[in-house]
Image (cartoon, rainbow, N blue to C red; front, side, top):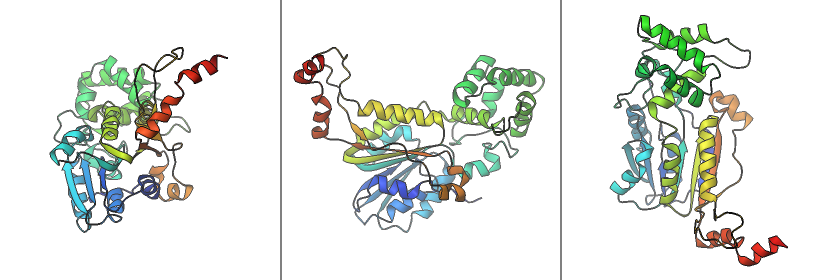
Length: 330
C-alpha cells in the first residue's frame, strides 16, 4: 500500500510559516511529505528542507515525493525528540521555521498489519517506529490492572477505564489477547455504546498507541528545543488532533511566551525569566470545505508562534518597572 496522507490545513500552514525562498525549514513529522512538498515548491536552490520521521514507510515515500525539488533536502529517520542531535549532525545551528503535524497518518490507520485501527483485524502492534520493541501486545498482555487504568484514563480519557482494565486482565488469564479484533470485541462487551460517543474502542486504541510510542511525554520538551533552534522571527506551527496534544502545546506556548514569573507583590523583576516567543492569534481550525473533503481533519487545531528578539522581550518586562508597580498600588 502506498503511503497516502492528506495534508491538513496546508494553506494555513504555508501562510503561518511565511516561507522565505532561501530559508531552512524543519518538518518534524514528515509522513508522506505533503506539507514539505508544498514548502519546498516555494524554496529556491539555496533553501533547505529537513524532514524527520520514525516510520520507514514514510521515509521511503517522502524521499521519492521530494526528489524533484530545486531546494536542498535532508531526510532523517529519527524521532523529533532527537531534533537537536539531528541538527547538530547536519551542522545547522538555526532554522527559519518548523512544523509538527501530530498524531497518526491515514496510511498508518489504513494499513491493517500496523494494528492502529479498531476497524481492521491485525496483530496488536501500533509501533510508529518498528525498530522499537514495545508493542500494543506487550501493553495489553503484561501491564498490570492499575497501569492499564492509568493509561486508559489519562491517554484515552475513558470513563470506563477500570471496567475495561479488569476485563482485559480477566481475559488474558485464560489466553493472551493476540489481535485487534479480540480487543475490540472485549471492549464492546464491556462498555455500553452511546449514540454520540463513537465506537467504544476508539479511546482505548488511542491510549495504547500513545503509550507504545511515548507521544505525549516527549512533546513539550521537543517544542522547547525547536524554539531554541529558531532564528529571531522564525515561526513554529503545530497541528494537533486531540485535546491531550493540544493542551500540552497550548501550555508550552504559554510558558515560552511568559516574561517575568516573580510573585505579583515584587516591586521589580528579579527572576530574569525572558519570553522566547509570541503567540500568533488563537488556534485555527479547518474550513467546512476541507472537513467535507477530508473527515479526518475535523478535530485538527493549528497553533502558531514566532521567536522574538530583545526588543520584544524588553516590552514583556516593562510592566515590572517600579513606576508601574507603584501606579498599580494607588
